[in-house]
Amino acid sequence: MDKAMELARTIAKNAPISLRLTKEIFHIAPQVSQEDVQRFCNRCRDYIEKTEDATEGPRAFPEKRQPNWQGK
Image 1 (tube, rainbow, N blue to C red):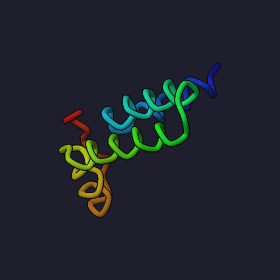
Image 2 (image 1 turned 90 degrees about the horizontal axis):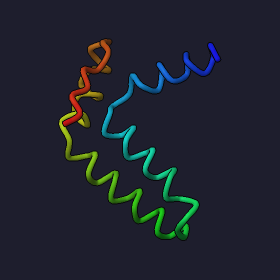
Image 3 (image 1 turned 90 degrees about the vertical axis):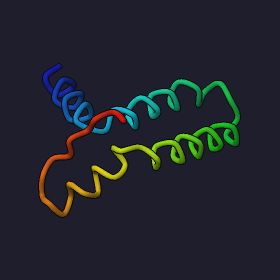
Image 4 (image 1 turned 180 degrees about the vertical axis):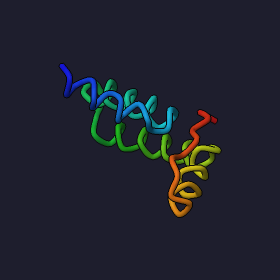
């Protein structure tokens, strides 16, 4: 259980929009065709690329700091 909680905390440190959409992908993937999953993934990526969080991650990296995810 300790390892599971450690992994959950690590995952939770990531961008909330990306986490939410990744969870949705995992939920729908077994129910639809591979092509439909790929289309959904592409739409998710396109959406994420337009968020403020998408610019925060690459901005934080060279500054050697943790990203300040806003979920926007």
